Amino acid sequence: MQIDWKKSIFITADVLIFAYLLVALTAFNTPDERNKGVCSQVKINISDGVVEGFLDVNGVKEILKRHHAYPLAKPLSNINTRNIEETLEGSPFVDGAECYKTQNGHVVINIKQRMPLMRIMADNGEDYYIDNKGGIMSASKYTTNLIIATGNISRKYASKTLTMLGNKIMADKFWQNQVVQVNVLNDGTVELVPRVGNHIIYLGTPERIDTKLGRVEKFYRYGLSKAGWNKYSVINVEFDNQIICKKSSNLN
Image (tube, rainbow, N blue to C red):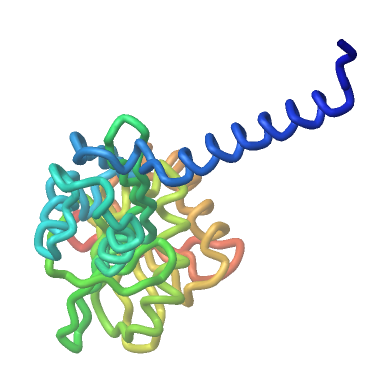
C-alpha cells in the first residue's frame, strides 16, 4: 500500500490549524484572570509622603469612599481605574494619580500630591496656600512649618513673585530654617522676618534674590556672629554691594 504523503501533510496541517483556532477562541472567551474575584487589597502610595503635606492614606480613602469609588472588596471586573484617577485628581491637593489592577487581585494607587510652599494671609482678608508651582490651594486644611506671607498681596503677586521667592528660600537649607515670615509692603518691596535675631531683613524689590540672600548669609557668619544677633533692628540689602544696618533702639 502506497501512502500519499502530500495528502497526509495537508490533513495534519488542517488539524493543527483547527486546534490552534480552538485554543485561541477558548482563550478569547475566557475572562481575564485579573477580573476574577474581588479586590483583596488596596495599596496607596503618596509621593513625598515623608514631607508634611495635605494628604495621607486615610485622607485618600475618605475621598474615594465619599465618591463611592473605594475598590476594596468590590468585583475586579467592576472597578474602573480611570474613574478612581479622575476622582482623586478632582481634589485640590492632588497633582496627579495613577491606578491599576494587579494579577493577584490588588488595586494600586499612586498619587503625586501638591506640596504647599507658603501660606498667604493678605491684608485684603484672603487666606490660602500656594504650592511650589504657583497654584492656589484652599486653606481648608492646616499645616505647620510653612512660611507665612502677609501684607499687600494679590493672587497674581502670590502666584508669580512669592512662588519664586519661596522656592529660592526652600532650596537653601540655611534660609529654609531661618525665614518664618515674608511681609510685602504697599510699594511691593519685601522684608523677611527671621527665626533667630530681633531684626528685619529688607530685600527691597524682589529681584536678584540669590545675591541678596548670599550677602546676608555672609554678614550673619562674619558680622552678627561677633556683634550679636540682636544688635540691629533692620538689615537692608536693597542696593548692590552694600549692607545698611539700623542699630536696635533697645541697646544702650
